[in-house]
Length: 332
Image (cartoon, rainbow, N blue to C red; front, top):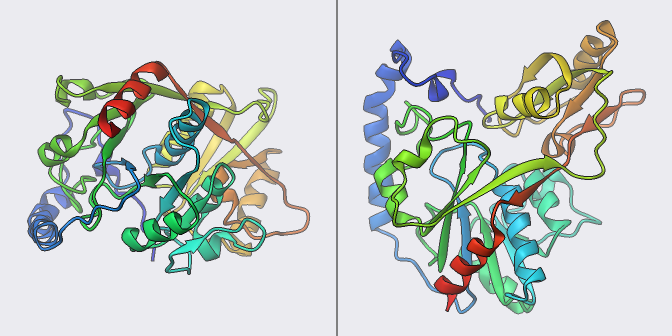
């Protein structure tokens, strides 16, 4: 079952906490107890292949997938690694793994949408057990592993831990799940990180929370060269993400598209034909086109006569040299 992100998780700074947020604080304390117990009862295993973890402190999409792809490109273009592999849990897929993703045979229902996107850019292994996934990658000749998510995964040692932060989302209301989006206490997550990657403008004054002694690498998202924005066209946007407003704001504020209606679904929503037909009816009523993310598109059924556009994005480093220096320093 997938759920929508509660609006109070990312309420505006300075606003009062609603009743539901306050009521969930005791549940957050219980969550923290079991999280801490899990961390203490698991010992991290070090594998022979260096591991870079691209994680986050909040639940939901902060931009780990485009960050992982950009990092893969950096490693290869600067000869830091010869054969790096992606490791990913494969949320939403049926495969428990470890499984080497095959773009010719696997679908989003097999390995998850994120795994399919990563596999276009490098060898990708799906599996909940990161240690087993690492061993499978080693069997295929991997000399470095990029772990998409898994900062809180206690069973495997990470040589470099990068925390991805979206400037629009920040750390939300800074409360633990389910009262807020934090996967762990903010102080613990910040202490765990070796460096931070800030995507987009710092709209929540995130930098003030970050330890000044740790590297901060800034980056931004932009559409790939394949996407041509049609500013004369009307669009109906929809997305099933942890924080769909990030995508909607990107369309309206960055791409300057005419988007009169935005429709949110639960994170990793399993679209069916009824969903797509209902969306198409809304679009036809406004003489608009449908537009969504690459991840959502991979979960859409095929319905004759219905076309959905996507916005492929790529991440650009503000200073790639700073990133390379951090990688070499930590992995030396």
